[in-house]
Image (cartoon, helix red, strand yellow):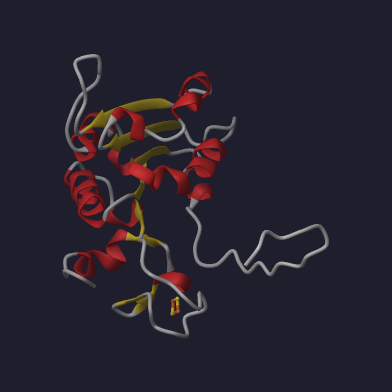
Length: 192
Ligand code: FES
């Protein structure tokens, strides 16, 4: 199809599914954990939570394969000015890289200061999200305060075609953001 021109019509549907529970984080400690491109879905939530009257303390943990894979890097200074604590880690880097190397999961324990008052918002590959959830829960964060954003192939977006089915859930309608305590057993089933 050629490029659209002035006056052409386009059809947009959505938004569909569940958002990040931003208001639930107000007054609490919120830890946003992103693996790679996962941060794209969380940027708006970060900006909302960082506003005056938002969450009590906001920490963003970012993991990427390489430093150039850290999304929105030019915005980090502004986020820090707004009071956001940012920690990054990468899998591979040259000697110039000043930060840690390894899984973003390893950054979780050090930033949980008040577990009962902490909410986790996590987006990334499934194994990474399970690792983050289990690390947070091991440090006392309630499983009901851990939220994961699932990525599944979708078509209809209205719980009709079944393409995104995840056990009893349809990720297009019931997700993509789901509470970990409701999906923990399903997350451990390969290829689900
Ligand atoms: S995309 Fe069709 S059921 Fe979810």
